[in-house]
Image (cartoon, rainbow, N blue to C red; front, top):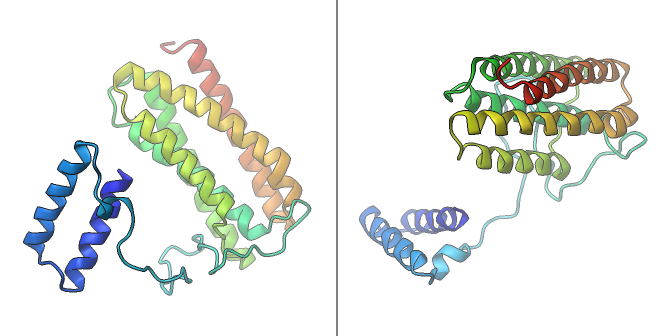
Length: 233
């Protein structure tokens, strides 16, 4: 829960600044949880009790070449193509799209589901993994670092919410919901590629990668639709 995360941050800050030791923080955590369950969440759960610094660029360097970076402080977006979107942002969208499908597939293969859906999830994991690898290598060749803008982050948050709802299910209920989600998500990605990404891309190699991605996504969508129509065939 967000409230529990806020509580954890506040108590960690109290430990670091010497206001509480670990034992006192544990006791405070338990008491706050009890108050929350009784419908009276304390202030320590509802907002940070300390001032956080302004967002700044992460000084760390990724060990995976071509990995996306968050936007600079202030969230400024670099100039882009016809849709006001840069190639850096487009590459970040491609990475996020693939990661979203990989995360869902990785949960699906752990479930006790029918063999057809299991094979479908394994195929998605493999092919989206290959696509993200190609996207990161393309970013290196173009000397463009994928940039996670607020729009990219929004896509990631929506996917996380969908996955959170999915993992509450089990067995064939999970399988049916997973296939339905994949059908909806791949249809959405097709529309995004057709209506936004291709129109905004400037580099020809990036356009070729988007076209290849579109073909793979269209194939995945048809596979999902076949599973929806004949889930056990």
